[in-house]
Image (cartoon, rainbow, N blue to C red):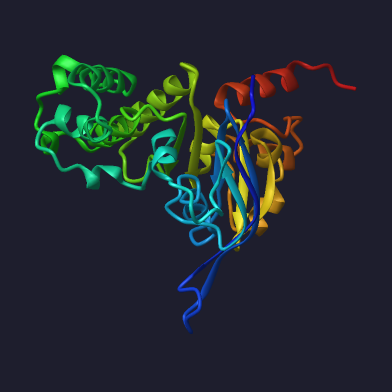
Amino acid sequence: MSEPIVQVSGLWHWYLRGTPLQTVALQGIDLEIQSDDLAAIMGHTGSGKSTLVQHFNGLLRPHRGSVRVFGSDLSDPKLDVRPLRRRVGLVFQQPEMQLFDPTVGDDIAFGPRQLGCTPEDVRRRVRTAMERVGLGFEDFKDRYTFGLSGGEMRRVALAGVLALEPQLLVLDEPTAGLDPRGRRQLLDSLRAIHADGGMALVIVSHDMDVVGEMARRVFVLAGGKTVMRGGVREVFSRVEELRELGLGIPQVSELAYELRKAGRDVRADVLTADELAEALWTSSTSPAT
């Protein structure tokens, strides 16, 4: 049964707080993530996306408002966030830059070893994590980490987080810098991870096609505020509002929007090429009224 695992209410955060260079990053953000969620947080650079998600595992603490994650109150200065960080996996932009071990298996094993897992459990976690991102254990465990392709390195970095067996996985711009093949492989892995169950997924992105393809619910940030929220189809049907925020919509949705403007009978919540083809076929075969 779905239940809230992240509850953000009236969250404010400043950088360089109390100095002449103080800058407000978040201004009263409200957000809730469910245990089975596949959600996206989108907005322009500087909208507060990365600052927000760094509150989910205690890298940042609320300056005003509240953040509760798995029942823990991040406003409590006495809270030990180490157990929370085992439950919330945060994958930063270009995580492959954080790889350091010469071999793939040892790099992925680093986190479980730090947790004090037995050698048998470390091996199990590494094997499971590698398989979940599409890297065969026997084929890749002894490979030279820095000889992999960019997409493979990205998946190794993701496996390193998955080996901690989090219940919430947060990815900041997961496809940035990847070629089309690497992008497709990574998104397929993420979709399979979520389909396996037991893990909520939050994607932070300004790539509208990624959001449209992956998310069920969307939160739109602008100027450190939550300015829009709802189901992905509902949000992307609000084309003019998104454009006023300097944001676009998925390419297929953009084409459907232009066709509607040209007088074609195409529904407003189209997200995929198949849906658009079906809508065009339906409109072309419907009897004239």
